[in-house]
Image 1 (cartoon, rainbow over the protein chains, first blue to last red):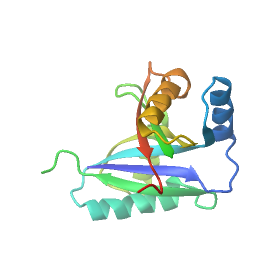
Image 2: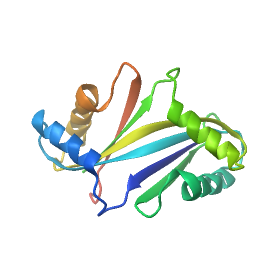
Image 3: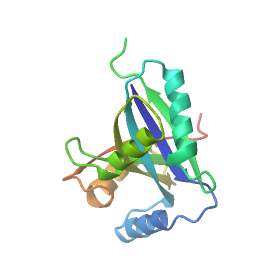
Image 4: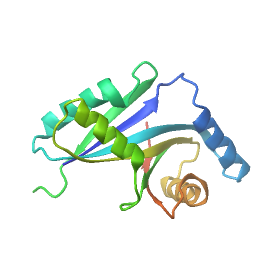
Length: 84
Length: 84
């Protein structure tokens, strides 16, 4: 089973990496870019079979280690690859 | 319109950040973690209305700036928020 945790800075928290990317894309001639936010994604390969348990585990990982919940928000997706 | 580019190190490319996260999670008592890969996600707010054009633009951004395609792969998702 695969879990994907996506961790982004909360709205309102300054994102200098995202701003730098937006400026670079502007300078390269890409038009119509209103905003860019950069975050991190953590893909976990898990041995368990229970997607609900996996979701609870990954949420706990985010709360305790992966995200700084003061300034970051996260979302968790579970993919049951290769299962009927 | 919102576009999400997810950029990961290719399989086979050493991922020390992912390994560090896996070790930390092991030490915290999380069981059943087989592999961890860490990548980056770039969320773009775009003013255009054509999702296919947006996808082509974001692929070009990945090829030219956002990803190092020698060692990184990327995937692009387009979300047409708030449209029927």
